[in-house]
Length: 175
Image (tube, rainbow, N blue to C red):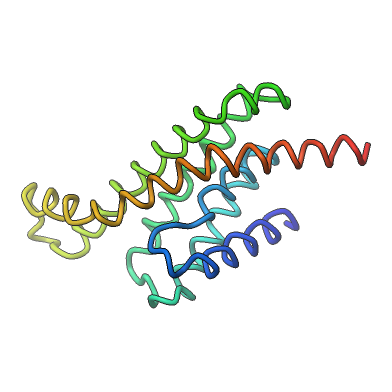
């Protein structure tokens, strides 16, 4: 519970700090790191609490009906963090995989953007949703998706490994 609370507070606080930069946020990286270090349940808890809270307190207003889709998309980062921890344990494994971790984060961001844009189309056009309207919504989301995906790649390649290595070092020092 304390891990979820601490990481969620960090995610929401960092989202406020980065709010001037649309779709550039550390939440995805923080969820990934939480799941990497503490398992899927902890990462999923951080994803659910952080995204649900941000969907209400965001400076751009409440996300409303799309909130469950945003939360579901954020769970991708928890799954990716947990999965990555199964293959890249230890300082050498993480340090040598920084680009790959960035790429995993980029793929998650792409899937998150694809899913949330599809959800936007579903909510906006239901029951008259057509393939054309879905594709139009996906294309309209590209200007928002590109900075999200670039930021997640960079944060995944630079911040996530540093946080994981720092946490592992802190565990080692404490004994």
